[in-house]
Image 1 (tube, helix red, strand yellow):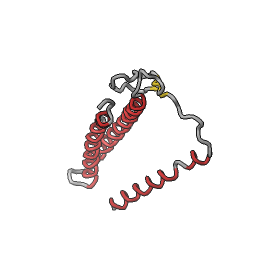
Image 2 (cartoon, helix red, strand yellow; image 1 turned 45 degrees about the vertical axis):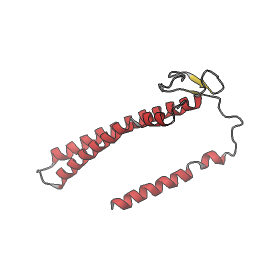
Image 3 (cartoon, rainbow, N blue to C red; image 1 turned 60 degrees about the vertical axis):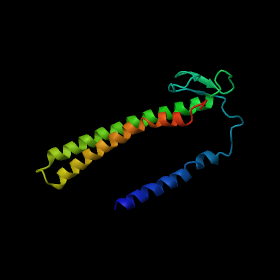
Image 4 (cartoon, rainbow, N blue to C red; image 1 turned 30 degrees about the vertical axis):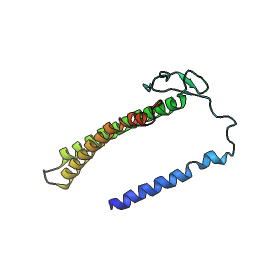
Length: 147
């Protein structure tokens, strides 16, 4: 059963990855010029990168690593939102599991076990969410400029 669900999720993810670019490609027009700057949404900690809220100009000789700054800033920003979403799911699963445990009639009923499992899944999700906070730092270490 779990293998079928996992297979379904993977296949639907692949189908979405193939279908989502269609609206963009349907327009048929590509921009004549690529953007020449980006807005740094979160401080990266990389020397020479602008602070949060400032723009990074690709043609500026004072910021030779502007592309790296923009990529790392975007990864940090996305990871922050993913962490908030994951924490919301963890809270929901914890409350749901606690509710199932409290409303079960005994210690060995299927409802009690489901509640225990939901709380266990919430703890595992919390550990994964905490680990995901390290992903931007790992990426920054791998593509750090001047290495």
